[in-house]
Length: 148
Image (cartoon, rainbow, N blue to C red; front, side):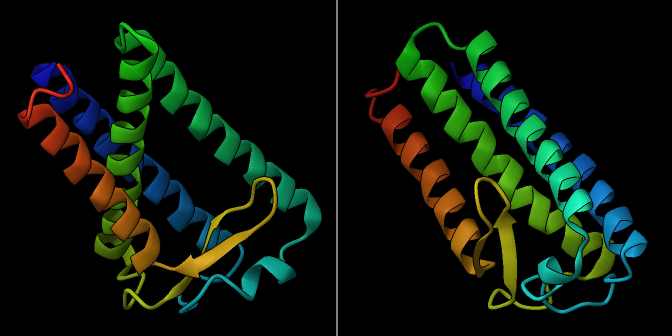
């Protein structure tokens, strides 16, 4: 299981960078590359493009679900693998954006986390905290042989 967790973490990191690059291009295309927050920008994006962005978000979740389904041997393991990969993807998505465009400028920066089913808006520290706790919890469960 340890090798699977490492490989899923690498998958999540690679996927995060890929999505980070896509978001850099999206931000440039809609002229928000230097915007400190994404909260107000959502209202200015044409609805058609918001729907397109929602399909990208849905595709991301489908990819994470499929990789977990293909690697896990039980439903519990599949769930753990989904949460693990999602957490690495989420953490490294923000790291990738910061490396590429120095965004978010602070952990207090407000972001639109998801658009599905409605916009989820929160400071960046929230998804980073949840993802970090998810990774730590899975590591502790693995170390104490609760996850085998």
